[in-house]
Length: 508
Image (tube, rainbow, N blue to C red; front, side, top):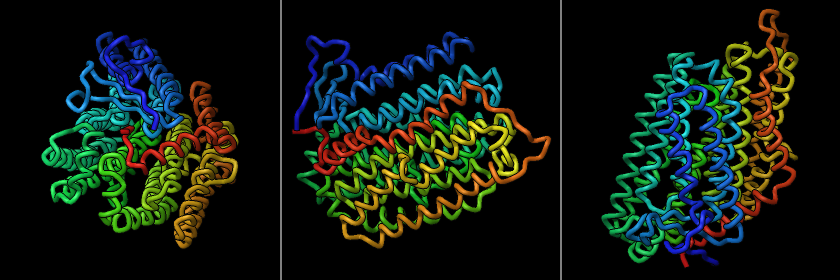
């Protein structure tokens, strides 16, 4: 594998891109608080997020050929120093997270003004940037303990962001508290696993860990570490049945926050699971333990059907989409369970496509909440006529969620079915198609409510403001664009899958 190694001599601004990816939003967050200006809070947040997105694009272009970037914090070489390591797998996720954040922030301005009091605006944008910082840091770091640190930065800010929904519905407080409890349990399991790894190997650098685990994979301590890390990350991923925190968190959080978290947080957790399973513990170790066939595969199938069936019977569109997210996470886990390049490629592309699809859907729900006063189906009756642009974007994103040809969601499902057939698991391929038919039912219910139901005269709503419509349509059109032109996503996911299955953290 081609490599690119950065040293502490003669560094240019381009060489510092890995640290700037995290540093820009991290510095901007306290800057918003120090300035204390409601007028400046949003512009600072948007500019910081946009800079991170540009940096993510530049990093992705550098590693699409299978190379990697190793950045040494303070010039201290790993394993003693902390390393930021960028390859195709995490550059792809950085691109998704920073991109969704940058599109959602213009949308968030009008949405948050309607859903939270003005006095909370400044702190909310600061917390938003801290959450973004944590998610980007989790993805880019090459240090196992740093993953835990950034995971906690994003989680702690997320709890408060969800609780801000209490201004509309007090149940947001209990949703945030439930997430705090479950998130803390997950983080505890994860850090215990990291502690076991350190005890067994004496290092925290991921590349160094991989080398040392390879020569003592029979160690009970390392096997215990693997179990703790899988369970801990599983809570963050919302693996069925560790998903109970997610529906309420997504339902009662402010709409813009739900759109951001649904598009990014669980995707980052999936990335962490992939990184530890394939880059740190290595495919050879994963093949020795029955995790994939005993835990990941059955729970993925349970999520695909259990969560989809639950979604069908929801009366709240926002809650329905939350259960749909759990089902879609099942597809990502299924790709991992195939333990093949095709499966991992399907997981990576599903991670990306579901991110943009679900962000679009929750943005549409936020527009409905703004104009109709709620997201229950009875609030949405006939809104296809009074809010045609919002409703049309929702239909496009809904088709992507199902996997209709011509949308991003179809590429994900097609690759997953191909991976199942390549593995000789044709019953699983049939189950993938069957679970997609369940998605038709709950998406059709949304379309039926918007277009085929008469609205009451007093519930006639106005079109959403342009500041919300434009970002919503950017995401909706992205669902079509990446369905018709999938060169970038296929190239990135293929390179990422090859690297992961080779057990690579960019090591030679």
